[in-house]
Length: 78
Image (tube, rainbow, N blue to C red):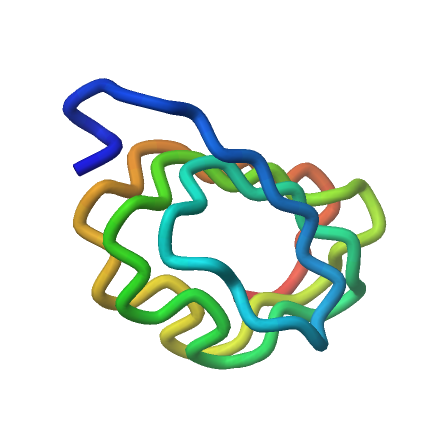
């Protein structure tokens, strides 16, 4: 697992694309993170939300055992 060390794989999420399985660090560039957007992504360690991200829908990060940090400065609704 990525959380145990290894390569860092960065990815910018814009809401439409399929998230590769090997991604470890995500930058979110949407206003709303849809429900289950990152569900079951085993290697995601960190998610940084753009200041304009306002809402995170239900179970967006469920089943992400390696997730250690989510930075969400502008988020108003979770």
